[in-house]
Amino acid sequence: MKLSISSLSRSRRFAASLVLVGIASGIAPLFAADSPESLREEITALQPPALVWREIDWNYCLLDGIAKSREEKKPILLWAFINSDPAEERC
Amino acid sequence: MHRPASGIENQLLQRIGESGPAPQGIAVLNTDGQVLDWVLTFRDDPAVIEFLDHTLKRFGENPDSSKPFATERYQQFPGQPSDPVPAHNFKVSDNARHGSDDHCPASDVYLPGTMIARVSGRRLNADGSVLSGEINQEDYSQDKFLIEPALQEAFATALDQAGSGTVPIPVEIAERWTAYAYMGMLDVRPLDNPMGLKTERKMVEFTALADSERPAWFRLQGRTDVVVGDPVKGEGRMKMGNSVQLEWRGYAKLEDRRLTSLVLVAEGEESLRWGAGRPEGMNLGAARPPEVSSLLGGRPIQWSGPVRFGIIGEPAGEEQTSTTAGSGVVDHHSELQTKMPRLRQYLQNGGERTRQIVAPLMPEFQEMVRAKKFEEASKRLDEILKLIEAPTDPAAPITPK
Image (tube, rainbow over all chains, first blue to last red; front, top):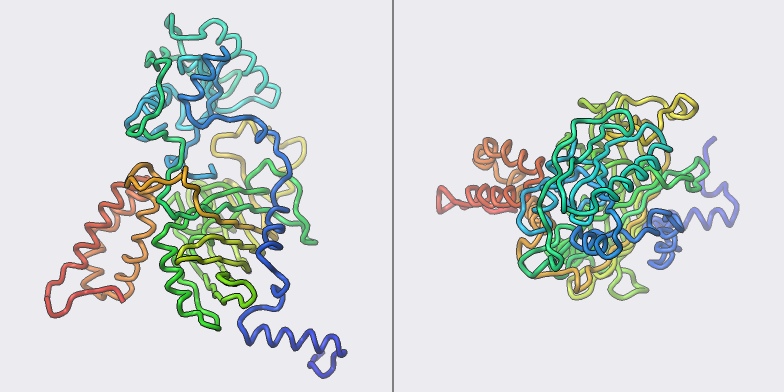
């Protein structure tokens, strides 16, 4: 079925004209309601509220870990990753 | 752990690493940093607890370096031990701390003005809701990348042209965030692939428009389509591939030619394959091996479906920055990323002479990058650029366009 703007209802015609304006201005109207704050909220919603392993107070510095181990007389659990660049976040 | 470096922590890490049965793994140390046990995988979930109990007992017997003992090593605990080796005797004094000339290898130090961007990624259900599960990187991913001051300056220069209309965002900037929006492990990064796999940038197109309602803010939108390896058949020994197609929207705030805020959301489709690969449904059920038994190299992954990513970038805090060049790996990596567009420009515009200069030098340079020898690679790139820029005919110097 062919569809033209004239065959749509008034509200749909208005929406369709917004789409055309959006395309002409280079910004998709779908994004018109966005703000930096609303996008931050969307991103925060992607993050899990609580992760068990995050509740552990991991030490990144082994010297600090050794000092704490001596103080608390407890062993150290060391995770060694293959990444040669310690700045990499993924493994 | 496996990088040659100076400093007391690096020396200790290297001694610890020497006894490891593989470059990665889990170790339990005593109060002097000696390795009691190394383990790579576990028979099943209960074996993890058994291992921790076992090492606690060993810690009771060898809490420090007062007497020699052997480091136990397990390919899999229990049941698959390797030969034990004598525990190292590198002693760390009680007052050992990092100093100004002994950079902690675990702390990131950035050039002042660097933006740190954090990425969150989720797989979606068909209805657009977030798929549950936060344990595996193919379900929930977190990542981080940097936008150095030099790249921000290039961004600012592009936006200078914005006026009241849209302007294209330079591809070297857009590629930075495109490279990090993917699910799965580091190996399947679809651009700047750390395994050195061939990547294809089918589309990386972004535009910016000054936001009339928010001074200093620019609205961003874009479309990307990038591929590494072969997501259907799998490429290389590990049979890997990843293709990611995304629609992007977001905002960037620019003040005094520095990016002070970046917010991006991307949605689209991803097809990921890693390992022998099998349909996702076959990963479920009683026949599925325990995940703790395949920690090395991971388990097979193969899926296609909708994904959503979010990126929030903020300037590094003062406590994270240093003007000391080369204070850490991050600086060399960033340095290299900043210089690469210059080389690309020369290759695109420099003609046959440039290609003749570069071609024989590239394999060694690429090998350095692949091996993550960023400092070496950065110096080599300087040499290559110097060769290109040295004019053979003073009347016709080669300059990037």
